[in-house]
Length: 564
DNA sequence: CGTAACGATGTG
DNA sequence: CACATCGTTACG
Image 1 (spheres, rainbow, N blue to C red):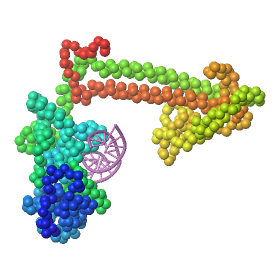
Image 2: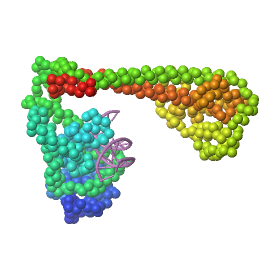
Image 3: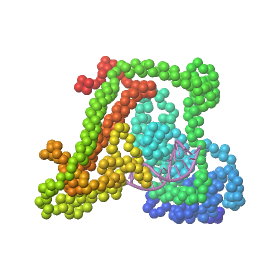
Image 4: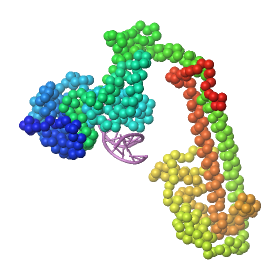
């Protein structure tokens, strides 16, 4: 293998900044673009090598924590391949390692702990962003994070922490540059004490980003800034590798890791406390002379709470006073909205009781209609049997049908198709005091409850079979709406004119009832929102966090007369 | 092609 | 198990 290495006439990382290429990138000492085999990356130059070209098997690689190519090792003899801590299983690998390299495996972790940052497909571990451990809290990615109150939709690392070399370009610093620039300018004029060192770091970083020539870390001496295409390819390998890893055993593959979280915490603590020389300082609790606990500003939780309480006592009264000085427009609006909502609720309730009344009325009418006796007269039937030639087409099946039976046919046809589909939600209906609204039949397969109107659901209910002697009973009307007090007395089976009239009338009423319920629901929601907004307004937290600035003390109410 | 969203996966 | 962050995908 060594001989192979010496044959290497080209450094693994040729500076290809010149050839922003189209052709596939080349890797390894063999300078081939093949990536469909196990590969290992040099932790110095970041070049990738085929395992078989350099006699490193995947199995061996599992024991390696840091790996350097021959080229890099020759140039910098201090680079030594480092192995994972011995574990029972890894002992078996030992002989193999010996063959491969003369350096002693089994380095202690301590030597490098904290000194190096993790490397991965997306982190070179060298550049400033890679080393950065704190999120800027400013960029879009930070703002998306849960810890900064975001929705966690984007789920990307802080822009200032995106590796300069390996992170995808679109994830790196963007127009935030602009705002940073502004901040930098403002900084000059602002009160210094508001700027902690963190801001300054950011500025430094910003400068790096705005000066493209600045190179990052050791990587740039020989390491290429990969062209986008090349970067993509390199990633692909990593990806392939990842998949493989997944197959044989998850944990094994990860090299270089670090307890970043812990470090963060410690750092934070340090920053707050380092004004005091030495590592013990006095507790900041009111009147407390004890020594603060390590990594804390206080000797005890109690002291912290006391100070916090004092802070509230100090600030809150002022803020309350301040708050009361100017009228709250939002509060007024809220009250108006509540009034409006209440009026609408009232109206909706009226409508609802009206609908309930009609519901019962309809049931009365239907019951009444049932009492009617079938009239055997033929004339009733004959009245409409003149124009038999006319043909119309069913809206569901598009078959030509006789107008006489059209209603009946289309109703049935529609029911047939409709019953083949489902229309449900995962929640059962819970409306207090409402009878017969939704079908609500549970479908265990889809785990849903049917949300058709009960009277209109052909999927879960069949129209009852009509006895021969049942009368149609549809209330007859004059000029469409005016009831005559008469009922259709044709046999139900024969009446084509009023087919399923009960069902349709019921559906009409029920649909309106549903609408009113929806309206009520919506109004409740609105009311709740307005109320929570009003309760939270000028609450303890809000008062502590925000304040109203009276720009012009002469006029407290800044609205125009028109708005008032 | 960039962006937003989101499932997947590694990590502590 | 929650969190961090990656790669993928749909979409404009």
